Every structure is written in C-alpha cells, then in structure tokens.
Image (cartoon, rainbow, N blue to C red; front, side, top):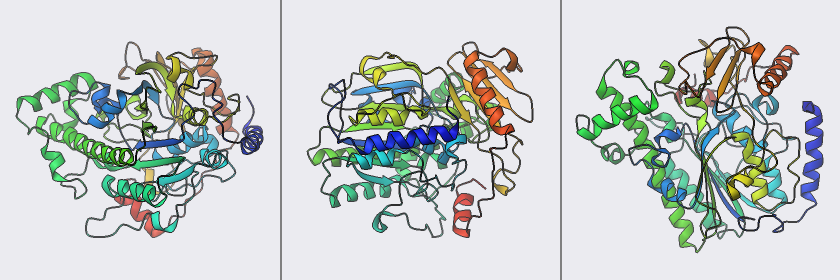
Length: 477
C-alpha cells in the first residue's frame, strides 16, 4: 500500500488521464452504462431499517420502494464515519477521513484532492449541488454554487438552521429549468429533515405528516412498538418504559422520512414531465442514528452498527438494472469508483483509492476480480471546544465484516463483537487485538502507526458566530 503522499501523487496522474479522455460509451457492460443523467440523494441520519423496502412494517417511503422495483438494493452498506461532513467527503474522494482530513462539520477539503467534481468536469457533466446545511456547502469537494442557488443565512423566530426538503427540491427543479434540462448532469441533493427527529412541536415538519400515522393507543401503534423493540432491539427502558413516548419518537422520525419521500417523488415527477426516462438514481445516507440502541439517541460519539449502517439503492428504468437485493458488504468509500465507471469513463479501477467499484454487483449480483474484505470507520475526533466536551478522549476506529467487529480505543479498552451471534453488539468479548483477522490487524496497525507518528493535527476551527449558531441550533454544540 502506498503511503498517503504517494497515493496523492498517483491520483494526480490518474486525474490527468481522465482529463485527456473524451466521454464515450466505453463501458464494457453496455447494458447499464454510460448514464448521462445521475441524481445522487443523501438523506442525512437515515437508518435503513425504517424503510419499507428494508423490512419496516410502516410505509414511510413509497417512492423509494418504487425505485427499488427497478434497481439494486444493498442490504449491508456501511459508512466510514458517523458524522456528516467526513462521511460525504469519503463518498466523493474514496478516501477515509484520516486521509482526506475532513474530520468535523465546517472543515474544508483540500482542493488538490482527487474528487468526483473533477471527474465530472472532465466529462462535461453539468453539476447541480444542493446541500441543506451551510457546513457542507462548498466544503466537501464541490464548489460553492452560483449566488442564486447558495444557501442563505437562516433567521426567524424558529431559529431554523437547515433548508427543509420542499424548498431544497424547489431549488433543484429551478436549476433544471434554468439550465433547460441539461443533456448531461449530476444532481446531488442533500436532505436533512430526518436529522431533527428528536425535536418536538417542530415548525419544520408539516403537521399532516405526523397525523398520517395512527395515534398512540391503537392496535397499529402497539404493533409498531412491539416490532421495533423486537426487530431493532431498541429498549423501552431508554424511553423510561413510556410506550407513548417511545411510539411518538419513532413517529416523528418516520414522519420526517415520509415528508422527504414525497418531495423526492415530486422531483421525479418533474424530471419525468420533461420527457426524461433515462435517469440513474442513487439513494443513500451519510450515517445512521442511535434512536436508543446502546442507550444513545444520536450519532457521532460511537461506531456501533446502527450508526454506520446506511441504505444504498441504485435505480434506473428501461430495465438497465436488474432488480436485485445484494447481501455482500459494501461501503461509502466504494461510491466514487462506482459512479466513475457508470459514467462510461475509461479509467483503470486499480487506482490507489480505498474503494472498489460496485458495478460487478450491479450487473451480475456477484463480485468480479476484487471484493470488499472489511469496512472501516473513524469517530469524529474530540477537540477542546464545547462541541464534544463529554466524549471519551483519544482516537476510536472500527474494522468489521459481516461476521465480526473490532472497535479500537487508543485511551481505553477495546471492544470485539461476534456479529453473527450478536448482531446488535450487546456482548463485548473483550480485546482480541492480538488475534484479529489479518485484514483487520493490518488496518488497525496502519492506523495506530498513523496516530503514533503524530499525523493527526487537529487545530481549532475558529468558527465565526454564524457557524457557531448553526452548529448549536442543529445540536452539535
């Protein structure tokens, strides 16, 4: 494995190669590529087990279920971080957080890094980038949008610090209209509403979405509680054994998801009204959410599966994709090489990035010459500010496959879980560092050497008052 500096040098050579190759339908499997129009959706803080197409008993996502009928669903996709900006940066660079160095919300990516934006530019894709938060806009590789489409500072009595799904979809539709429905485009739409599920009496959720689900005390409500307790392993004790509080918390989460789903359907209907019938939809999330698993409601502090497991759906009409459910392990770090290959760009997938193209799984349901051996994730580092005051000090990272998982703590005891026997990570089997699988051991040793060498230099962010207000209102401080 190249060291980090060598990898960046190699990537600069790869990028030069991309810039000298014209766009062409050179994909070896012409049945699915190239795609000239790609809609990439990231639904912040979305657990896949709250989607009907992933087995949830409540219909939270009819549009996403419809997409699944014409595409490939990945059952075991995992993020490289349980924090928003680092996770998105990994999707767009195929590097892990310690490599691309976007470790916190409001960190900015080094413009010299190999990034999806550069590839799309070289292939003449028009790019529409619509984040719902300022801490992502212009900071995770894609440039800040032109003035008309930039996020404005959010003000008002509600102190809302993110753009709701409806106005965000409006921006995307306006961009498509103003650009005359470009012949070739990449549209990234980031949706944040689910992230704010814990807020009661929120002004940012239309009440009809809360009211569309049965009230507490009905047989349907009791069935949902029993289902989540049993299938998601979220204990009633986290909600003080208050079944009504438990149910209303899940309903707030589900209602926000249904609101997002309706807005995505509206975007799809607009695209269809323009005569487009050849769109590749990619739907995923940056990370999951605790909701009470491991006695934790949120995300970011830990690296358990409920915080790292994300949905991943590729959908296209005209039967360009088979309808498949893939159980193999895949990761957010695999998105970049996959998207590049689906554009039809003639690029060697042996480039020294961390990801592997998922195109073999999309076409045949089976791996080709390479396959994912492990998933790696890194906790957002603790700093001296108020952002993560009570967190455990030191570095925490995890390595897992579908059978076992190692969570390494540099300043406390390590954790080890048998995921086949204990999928909810309830029985910590202790420190198995010396007897880890070779792939796990190599990755762990690589990170320990990285941290010991002093490569992690985490400075203060020096946020301005507007940025502090944003992160405070969103619950990060």
